[in-house]
Length: 97
Image (cartoon, rainbow, N blue to C red; front, side):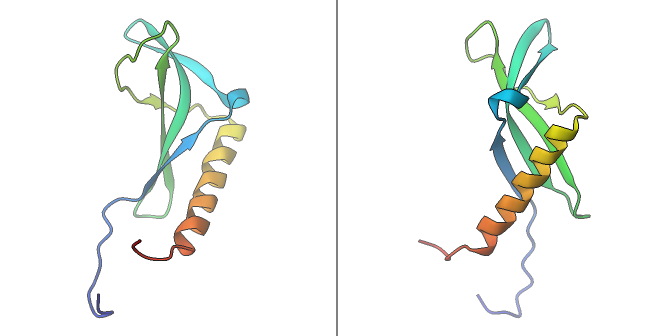
């Protein structure tokens, strides 16, 4: 691709596994979920947004429902560290396989 083409990136998101010691539960529609994964998005202004996903504690697949990430310093640190790590990985890419 030539350098004079303006490339528009519409989304940049990563999935992050929440370490066991940072996992939490939340309830949606009367069902309790254990939150084990974060989806972190880089917004156009450079800030980060995160949503949490998990599985019902009673078992089964359950619905694919997003949850707010609690305002806890250790979770904010995980989001920030994950974005930093993703930036390192993206910067080191070797092009299409």
